[in-house]
Image 1 (spheres, rainbow, N blue to C red):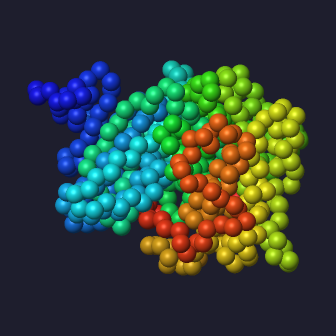
Image 2 (cartoon, rainbow, N blue to C red):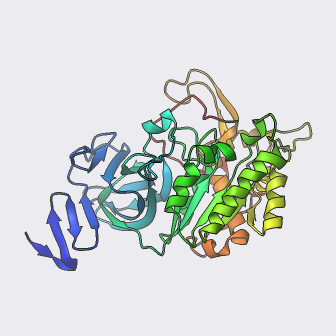
Image 3 (cartoon, rainbow, N blue to C red):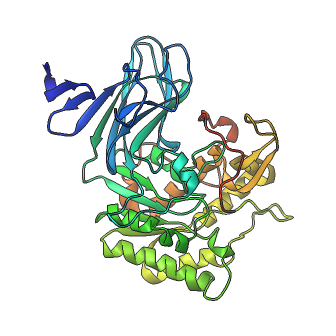
Length: 412
């Protein structure tokens, strides 16, 4: 076996860096993924050098945070590449490369399975089993006008990397299929490889059901001192009726549980008020539809000295800035036949389009600048945003993933 510089050893499973757990997977190996092999092209065939279709590559790894370094480019053609991971989680925005040019990009991906310990698991939903979110492999999606990648380097992330655990509902979760999207799957693109976003949110969840199905327990099992726990609920909680339910009763108790559990472990809780629904009055002003639920979070943040991101207010400003008609482009409003097999129009005033999710993620980052300055020190250079002056929908570019679903996510 030939020994290269940096103690790189050639092996069947790519290049393994001795004693560090680092592996480099050359994408010239076009073998498809299999559980026995533990790595390879997934979901679609390997690129043939002529097609510009999206392609996927998976690597089997244990639960944890991983530093991924992609070497983008090709010796055969120019490229234009976007990189996402797991369920359409955005990490690398479009990178252009000339023929023979290579550019490396690094980022941190959190990977997990439902297993908590020998006796407990997360009770995931049936549809989640059809995504890349809770399986035993880490999956990368390469998309763009001409996606090209020479190799993928995978290594355990340094223990000093800060993990931000996201707890929430359909407005936060990694939506696995077009045209739906959420702010939680856009926000990693704005940060360096010193921060990892672990998105535990799921469509249809309320604060109490999130706890009941062990999502919080799984997050806590991987959380360490100095990490963050972001908490955004309210959309589905407000629909719960009966004794003990309500904003100032079960909801407040559940949110306080998140705060206490994080602090008990030396982590930093951050409350995020629920995103607005698109609901305009006769004067063209967007209306709050969340009753007292945002106010409960503001009150608890003040009482317990918890960091707060008032996303409810920022998304009100955002929707008003876009206006009655233009704001439809921030939500899933598409005429019939926009996507394959979509025979009816989509008109959803809760769930975001990719453009809307990207704008709302910018709102969250803007809120973080005041609420969590220790995190925003790891923003990539050049970030600036004002929700009263959002980017134009016409200038936003998103290359569609091959997965599509006409059925809206759970929750409203």
